[in-house]
Each structure stands twice: as structure tokens, then as C-alpha cells.
Length: 234
Image: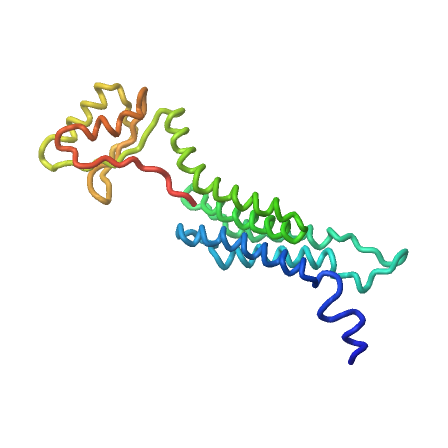
């Protein structure tokens, strides 16, 4: 019994030290933060999925580094420590591909698949001892998700010169006619005019100085509300 526990150590030896345990915990903590962000925003692949992917990726990398020390022998048995870890990338690729859905010509799930791939990379970096890189990438994730979306919408609207609005107004008072006349006066092209399920109408306008459209329309008599619509994140 003592011999069985001593060589190789069952609860010790390479790959089972305090450092490796901390690397697993770091991978778990960082990827759980990403999962929590997705959970808060009501997205698929939330806290549990991201934490499992990140922690499992870290464990696989540690196994790839230390899991074969008991069979190695100089000159006879040699193992490439990156061989098992390399399979994480291809495995996550299959998992991510299953999350991408094409529905009515629109592609959904790309951000979810990318987040899972990112969590796998964070877990691998933490297990490889590249903790600073893992932390930086986690911070960059929140920069991308929380800052890039509104920034990109503003840039697209400014460069493309278009804006989508939901306008509510008093019924039976000719407000819609005044709105259309105002758009014509400012030479704003109307590419969409439809009824909003929440009341009012949906307008997509394009033209010069289109950024002034929300405030201009909001100032018309009878208009009760103007809301600028942005595309929802995946």
C-alpha cells in the first residue's frame, strides 16, 4: 500500500502542486466573470458554460504538461508536451460550430461561439503560467462587449449617415404628416416606415446631418417620444 502511494505519488508529484491549483482557480475565476456578464445580459452560454470551458481547458493543458512524467524515459520514451493541449483548439472549434445558427438569412451565435473560444484561450493561458495575459484578455473582453457595441453603432451611423427611430405621437392630429414634411425639408431619405409593435412608427432615415434627426423630430408638436434604436447584441 505504501509503495503504491509513494511511486509515483498519488496526491503529489509533478502537476499537482499549489501552483497548478492556483492556475486552475484563476482560470475558473476569470472565465466565470465572462460567463456572469453573459448571464446578466440574458445571453446563451452563460456562467456555467464559460466556467466549465475555461477550467476544463486549463486542466487539459496541465495534463498535457505533466500527465506523462511517470512513463517518460530519456532516450526511449519522449512526449511532446503541447500535443494534448493542441486538441483544445480543435475541440472548441466543434463546440463553437454547433452554436452558430443561420435563421432567415441572418447568422446568430457568432459572439457566443467566440466567447467560448476566448474562455478556452484564457484557461489555457492561466494553466501555462501566463496569468497576466489571461487577466488582460479578460479585461479586454469587457471593453469589447460593453464599449465597442455602442461605439460601433455611433460610427456606423455617422459614416453611413443613417439612423433608426421609434417615434410615438398623438393620434388623429396630423403628426405623421408633419414628421414626413420635416424629413423632406431637411432632405432626409426615408428607407423604412412601419408600425411599431410597442406603438408609434419605426423610421429609418438617411442624409446629411442625420444625427440631428432625433432632436428635430422630438421638437415637433404632437410628438410624445423619440427613441433611437440600436441592434441588440448576440
